[in-house]
Image (cartoon, rainbow, N blue to C red; front, side, top):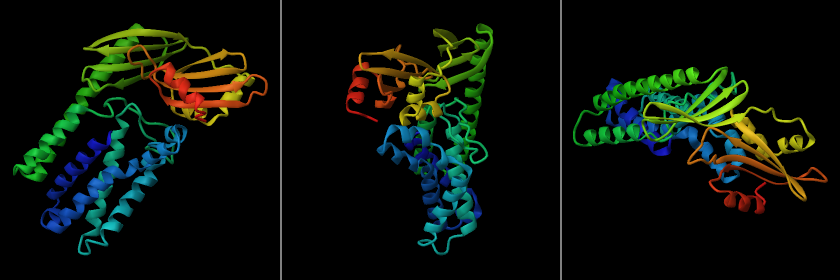
Length: 327
């Protein structure tokens, strides 16, 4: 989820924590827990700073180790350890449990995005992405703001946020059945499906669709319950050529391939270089596929000239990135 949603979720969990007698009967403890749940709800996203280095590092590692089981346990110990320096009389066990709940909730809700997390690491590096909820879901965010407003107006803190989360559990179930219906329709339309990747949008009844079949990739959308296929690409294996081998050694290309489960590739030949391009098929927007990885390979030496991976919404901007030498 986005940062704002994680913040309000931390506030909500801190409110629910007041139903715990150890927390609710001690204002100082309640304050410490509220700080802990807000901090815990943000801690896993500390890896966002990787974007300052370059897109390749960010794509490869964001929501990776910082969302893993060892990291969840580490955050849940680190945050209470710091808070105990200021809240000496706090109950460490309950402070730890509510911090653990906040960190775990962060990772749990991120699983429902299309981006996903490596939440079961170190047991597996597989990306777990259920594709039910957009990274920013207006209903989830606004419902938290409404609950916070009720609390500030005098409603019981614990029961208000508990009621909110009961409502949200129902919302997640609705989204699950909506997605299941889309998958059922796709299986009726397309034969030999190997994998269906559905990405929710901010609009409640609009979804992006990418399908892997044995012979082709299908790109579509679902709008108001209607599934439409808008693009079809023959599924051509990536060639085992010297040019492609050189491209795959590039950090931007390898980061893209480690993250993207469904893509098409292109190789174009120019006077002095080859252009190798990988295009993620999950994020089609207004007829454009914005998430790409591209490398220019010297025709004579097969050495990398320049490369880039990331979100690009025009060819002009992409070429500017490459001219700047974004390797």
